[in-house]
Length: 304
Image (cartoon, rainbow, N blue to C red):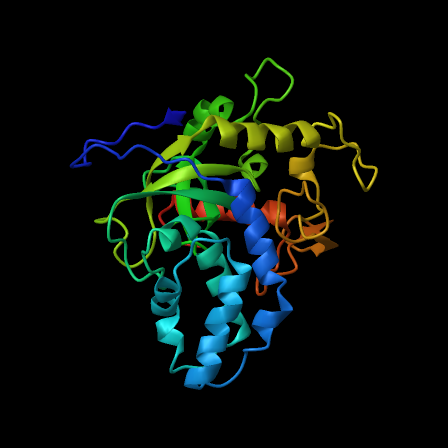
């Protein structure tokens, strides 16, 4: 287990990071998201009888040991409101990431604020370079919280390039002179780590204070890093370039380092045909120019 030290502003020692059965959590979440019997309850507010049927379905889908009363309390906010698809997805993430709490008779309600210091596992879903207010180069790491009270929510944290290089061997990369070195922040996409949420810093949204990397998480990351280095894995597209510079997103390739596949078109900024992010509406420049633009503007104190 590797844990970053708390800063001088921390008023108390960090709690010990717990063990997370992430493989089981991932498997249960996929099962819940694909369960057709849950989708049958989408629509207007449920009657009392329909609500009890909804509870019955959840009890059948969740692992054993979850008390019915705890589940009813967890679902109570839904008793008088409609259930849409987005709400059901949030529910699946929340319950899959909190089975232990449910079994311990602790209701799992939608996250509103952080009630206690808590370690949570995170999956990096997108990386965008920028500078800190003091001008240090780094990137915003947008992460999905996999378990814990804010399970399913997204949080973004800034990490400097210096920190990323320093912690990369703990994340699963090799030293710079070995075969699996860290080169760029995008290589963290779809890797995992634990983050500590402090109550005083997570009042309205989850905000990370410290980072921990247990051996199991490092092993998970190392497996992805090895595959990206073509060790025991053949690129499905037949490419030979490094995964972190590949235009194919992880929506198409499990080892992609960006959410969406880039498209080629002419860039008026660099006067070349280059790659664009199809989701970046209103940005008339390629990905490479946009990253340079973000770093330039933020160096002069502007937000992008």
